[in-house]
Length: 214
Image (cartoon, rainbow, N blue to C red; front, side, top):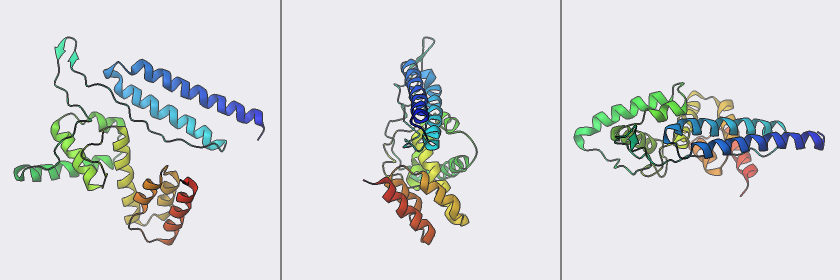
């Protein structure tokens, strides 16, 4: 590959990054554009990473959590808004336990579906919804489930854990190895392979950890 071609590819990547940053600046003071900002951030990063992969450059993480101040007014009217980063008690009362379990199971089913991450995020509107997603995060062993920001990154994290577990149960070793090779941290590699004793999976995990380095 000639230096000129590589330089051109890097220029395209830089243009995509600059466009992404400009869009985030435009959206940062407009809470109603939260989903737009997230979508642009994810898709432009995916485009840049695709080019990086094609030309042998280092691939960066796909998701950057975006945080806005909660929307409190719309067209002059006060709104009651739940701040998605607010810590919510994840221990329900006895009367609420069965309802919570049903809600968590329903939420998990939707996470296994084909809905986009942005769509799943938009459905989290009430205290009960927040309690359910934190309960789901707890079930899938997200370490800071009680206080982690409820955003695209959390949804993607939970879906990856569910997907990896399904692959283990189905014995789909090749698909799980592909997921391991996409992991961008050692912690994610360990989460994907926890409890899996398949030799090919363990070798892929070790190779990926070595590749990621310190």
